[in-house]
Length: 230
Ligand code: ADE
Image 1 (cartoon, rainbow, N blue to C red):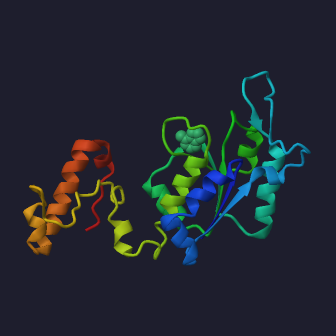
Image 2 (image 1 turned 120 degrees about the horizontal axis):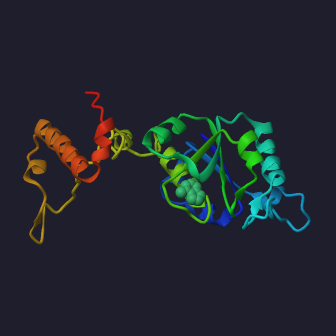
Image 3 (image 1 turned 90 degrees about the vertical axis):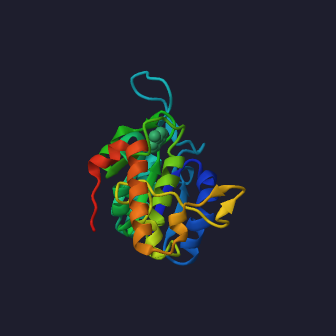
């Protein structure tokens, strides 16, 4: 999978994508992630990418020209499955959306900034608008990082143990069960006996009942969409 991220703050994303699992995914050939500085695509001699809004509204607006140039240049090289814009008024990001995006070959993610972007970009070039939550960030970079992270870790092989991405919280609309490591007794804080029993069937039952209990208590809304494929 290839992800091209377009931003006015490339340093913010370069730091993030060159760490941990995203770095390993790139080194091992599972993902290519490129960060494009929008200012490299402006035809303005002062490298400006924004201007005042028509109508006398407050704030600055990202102009069509640099964004159009950047996206058009990328599209000339390959087909993109989606051109994503990060925005608080987009569709709420969730695990099924991450699963679908992880099946894509090529994605563009355009990070929003300032007051917004010229609406004509959204009308003519953007195919999907994504919000990562009902709150307003200063820019779309954190959203782009969250989307890239959630999507790349789902590519088979990226996470060492194939099963671990499948047993994540939300993958079947249930929160994950508690998890423990050695020692079995840490200063009197004990690991549940069942996990030390070696009885796989009982452990699986325990895991499901813990998931159910935690979901009912913490995220009852998820149970409306719960599906158990077994
Ligand atoms: N840009 C600003 N706020 C955002 C949000 N909540 N999700 C995605 N992009 C954003």
